[in-house]
Length: 308
Image 1 (cartoon, rainbow, N blue to C red):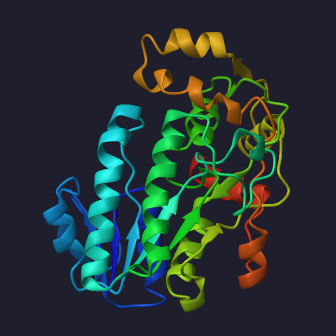
Image 2: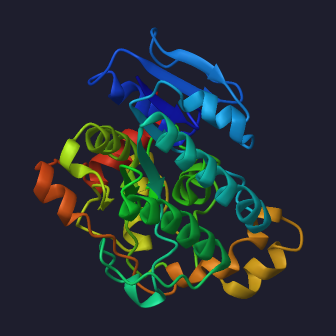
Image 3: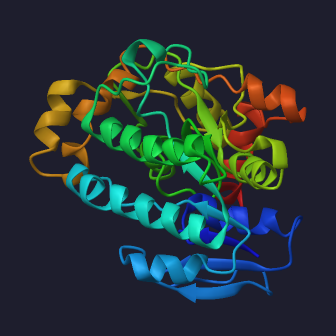
């Protein structure tokens, strides 16, 4: 059995489809889980409760940790270490392999223009410090030999049915409403985005590849990194709208943060937008000979519902 913790999220629902290629017994876990495949086992659980985490993992061969907490530093500091501890302990107890779906917040600010699995870990933000802590917990258990696990890291997301992506929220959705797309700080900087169906397919592949464990992997992402303006132009072309963009400078983000909770969380992350942000997945591409979705094709597939 393979188990998805956080199964209702952007990646979880797509991952469940991909796992059908490897197993007929998939357990989907969340507060209110929903079937993706007819044979899915629904397992309602409050993952803030270590006892329920342990019960959710019992009987699993592979566990995928894909939980997405509210984008709030206090929530992250309170919930992430507890969840990672509970997940690790349960996986060790039940001899389950662990696949942790991670982001790039823990990398040093100087690594952002070219991120690899070997980039320096030195987070410049409070959220990055949380990600460093929980990834470190996992890797420490791997090093001790108690846990078999891997970390699958993704750049920022985009893709169909994705409602937690910066690119979708302030570019695609604004364009759908006839409004100008927004971008943070500088739209002339390069910025990598991982296509969510690719991320899910690759995560399933890693979880079912014996020699992929006990290391970090960057999930497949188009090497042809575009600038913000170039990415917006792809959306504009597919949606047949103008490409004019409204830039959100730091001072405006801080003002918006007084009224919009999510914007209050953004200023510390702006180092990812005032310079190039390039995510290198060569290790994965070369190991698995994976055909990554191009930005052109990904944007086309993402915007298809608009044309129907």
